[in-house]
Length: 412
Image (tube, rainbow, N blue to C red; front, side, top):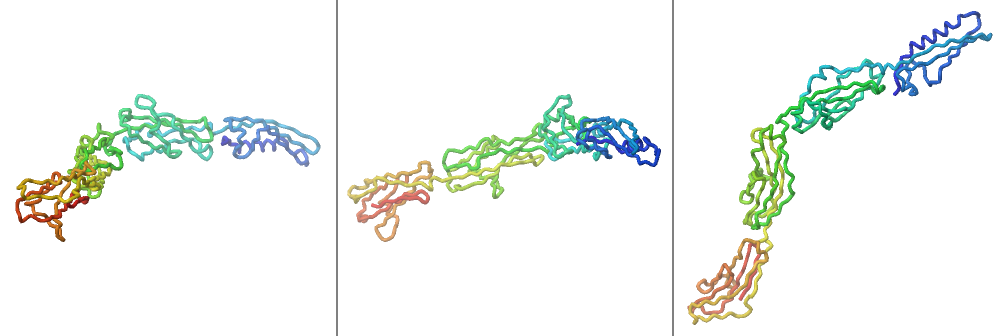
């Protein structure tokens, strides 16, 4: 943008010089010409030609020639000095704002410095709007700090933010800002602002850990320990510390079932352990950390899926009887054992196989005479023993091995 020159008064003087150059000596008309050095200068009330933008003061020699029709003429020369008034502008900062520290709390957001305390002897319409740039930031010992605390949000507004508590001991911080008007780059002023950095527990924070989305635990497996449940507090040296860490169900906001979840959160862990297959399912948990005195708290979320291998367990049977089993009551009370080999496909399933013995000799299933037939619940083997003549007949027996909804059976 070009310098600003006041030329209206000089134009008036030029016109007056032309009038005085020749007093009317006859009735002949006076003709005048104006010779101006080739500076591409437009003589208007304001000179805005970029060809003279590098001049703060510019002097031109003007030649005026007056001629009559009879050939008589005369000339006169004079100099015009153009002064860029923007180069003489005086910039100043309000002393009160310069010397009065601005109170700022660590970790407080949305605090801004409005640069509205600068004045100039030349208006912005003549010399342009103010342009600002940060020079540097220093601490109370004059040491230069990182400028990232201060960031321009608009041309005349600076956002202020830091969460570093060390700045309290470095306070007051001094921010140096360069200011100038846009039409003249050399005329600058350094604005100084002081910031008194303070701590307030209103701006303390608890930072929650980021955990895996879902944890899987199979009932009766070895305990699953979720570790690194570490909540960090920004300012424990200045503010009351975290004194509660606890587990809640997301849906009901009730405490987590301690039959499943062993609360060791003070040790930054949560242990999962149960042998109760009735607890199988998905659990959405919230782990909270709280400062009781201030009510400050934060949380993290985890999903736990408890699976039950017993539901997919298969009961396997080997050595099932394939022929008629005979028992002679003359053996007395000697026991005859029907050897059956029962196994589970999932050994991690904690539940034993439950056995039931049925007499299916008739159309209905009934439990057989326990004085004759006895099933061993530990092994699933059947023992036969009797001396009673009345018990002699043909029996058809069925044995069922079952875990929850899974079962297998054989008949003999």
